[in-house]
Length: 319
Image 1 (cartoon, rainbow, N blue to C red):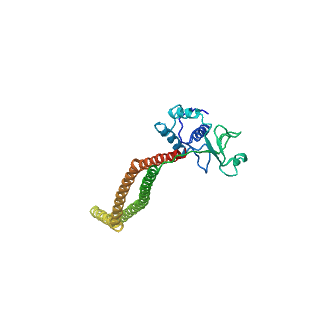
Image 2: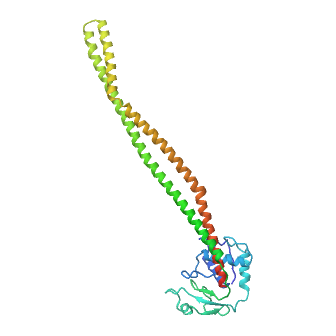
């Protein structure tokens, strides 16, 4: 078999040719680097175990590791070179998913030992269409993978702390936004009360002015009937004064300036609180987007990389 890629291959990606994925898995399995998840079997899924197998293959050949395989890069060239080597004598154990979907002839091969030079009639594990079987390499040699395992565990702990910190900040931001909404509702009610008080005051002022005008006219009229311009003038003047006085009485009766002042002060206080809440929300949003989320992304990347290194170590032990 020969591997040919037409575009970059990302082991942890989600958008790639399924056939190429199966071919890369089959090649790595034949070379003893890839063993699929026993709960999934050989399929087109791209995951950490495939990433680890590629990393292990590269490390054994001093090829710089990266998150992808480029068409005709050193990894593809080395894979094809290794596949061209005569490995007919090497043995493997046929493994199946052990469920009702396994072909009958494949189910009978579970646990049997074959060589790469003498496969069954339908080919090696995974060769048949949609076959989920895989070869389990038979080899010797063990090494301690404790260092890689500890690095993976530590990366996981750092990721957990980063995720908890991000979650706490997002919860705090949500609480501030809820408080802001409550304050906005309270402010709306205060503004409605202020408008209502202004309307009532205007109506009371208009009523007082009307009363004053009526009283002034009533007092000024007798002076005019007496035929004396002076008396009429005095009567009109008195009536006007009484009208203004009545208007002032109306203002005094309808005066709610103290209430208005209290509402205005509440409005000012609410506006200041809303400004302070908005500043806190914006500061938290910046912290989340520029600090906390990148920290989580980096921690997740470290977990993936250390997991790949640990799995690569375990894979080498199976060779």
